[in-house]
Amino acid sequence: MRIGVLALQGAFAEHVAALRAVGAEPVEVRLPEHLNGVHGIVLPGGESTTMRKLVARWGLRQPILDLAATGAPVFGTCAGMIILANEIDGGEEPVFPLLDVKVERNAFGRQLDSFETDLQIADLGEAPVHAVFIRAPIIERAGPGVEVLARIPDGRIVAVREGNVIAISFHPELSGETRFHRLVARLAEEHAVRTGAAEAAEANDANDANDAGDAGPKAG
Image 1 (cartoon, rainbow, N blue to C red):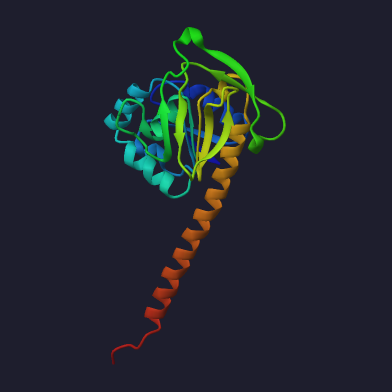
Image 2: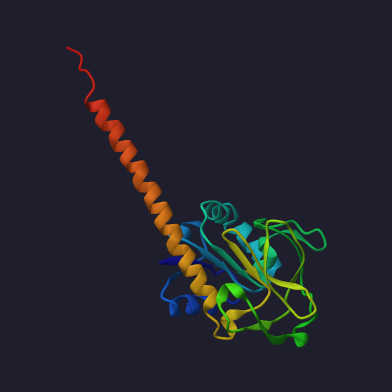
């Protein structure tokens, strides 16, 4: 199963390795044509302002939005969460406004203030998720259609899902945690089945239409 990883900047190599570890075929995405044939995409951690500029420079914004519109899973970690939000603290223009959330960047302070903790995420089973937070954002507001997946002990939201879009504040790829990637791979497989069936139905309809035309009356 081919799953894209936005590979413009940041911790994309670790996501590539995590996807490979769960049996998916990762595709490093730097240009729109790299999205051909993928059934999901990961937006990694890094520097969100730099990502914004590079996404615009290489014309990736609309192709990624188009992919998401088909129902393909989109998974954002740390900076990936920021660029998926439809509202960013400070009034910055959204990049991929696919989540009805407001995010605050660098909510825990500088890199020296990075920390690790265990989180319970019901969707991933009983075992806790070991979460690594590095200059991480948090979600200040989640809309009514957004499912909150995890909070830290002080109640702040650090993981959400809205339909096919999943976003987290932390870095599972840095702690050997692959259950999020396994979830994305499963959703990508389901997407491939749905889109494959739809394409097959469209092809059958086109063939039926052609056959009906061929069987029509001929001028004599």
